[in-house]
Image (cartoon, rainbow, N blue to C red; front, side, top):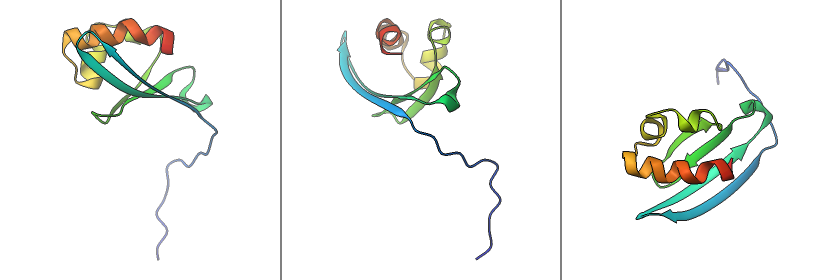
Length: 88
């Protein structure tokens, strides 16, 4: 079997936190993964939508960022934005 070239192959220990909460009329189920590899950002995974983004306290407040990364309405993104600073 031929070997396939890898561009990168890194193994690291991670810390993963699973949180579920309701905000307004929306339910969020997230996995928050921290690793040195992410350089002071947190990999936030929206489990039901299978969408993920590297987030920090700066980019969660960028207009349209959460909406785009997680395919959320403006109202859903604002509700998530209110919870994320305490979770990151």
